[in-house]
Amino acid sequence: MYARPTAPLPIGGVVDDAIKLYRASFQRCWPIALLGAVVMGAFGIFLTFYLRTVGLSPVGLAALQVYRQPPVVALYLLQMVLSLAFYGALIASQNALASGEVPLGTAEAIGMGFTRLGRAVMAAILCWVVITVGLVLLIIPGIYFAVVLCLWLVALYADDAGAMESLKVSRELMRGYWWRTTTILTVAFVIILVFSMVVTFVAGALAAIAVVSHDVGSIQLTIQVVSIAANVFILPMVPAVLLAIYDDLKLRREGGDLAARVGALP
Image: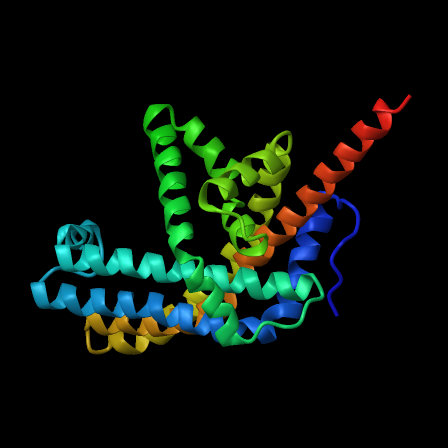
């Protein structure tokens, strides 16, 4: 049984809270994660067959050339937009559980994900522009803004914020807590990376069966199929981490505001 924290937590406590939320919400989230994983995997499978059709190697720098092709670019953007909706659905489902609200059904959560997709796409574009400009200029500003704006999707789907408002909420919550948030994200990333490496090892072992036929396309296809299964477990991890950070920063910000108000009393 998950209980949302009522007071700010230390860094390890936020990570632990994210793990608890992930475990408690997985039963609700896995159908959403499965659909999101299928969307991502479908693009990977399409890309594998497309590379085979045009005669390009599915590995190495040659494979990157295919992203210049209009059909691939169009499908890649579609996959990104759909993935955004499914991430939003995961956040909505996990937030309902954390808030003690009536559980969101799979269809209801996905419906919320797509209902707010328009403003989510707008916010994502604005966020991408800011981060890209920062990376192009001096790199460090881009990294800074990548962390500062990382909570906009939570603000949009957990608190129903608008596109511009969600970016502002993320920036305001992050003020004074950039290093703290970066540390939490790094720890969470390492945990997710280790899990992904284990999955990649399993995928490689299964793909070894296809090596007998020396069919690189079959190897890539096997990896994509295994990745779909793995993403069912991986996709809910990121929203759980972001939601745990979001809740912790809200508690800290509200506590700071309360302290300021108390200090201002005569």
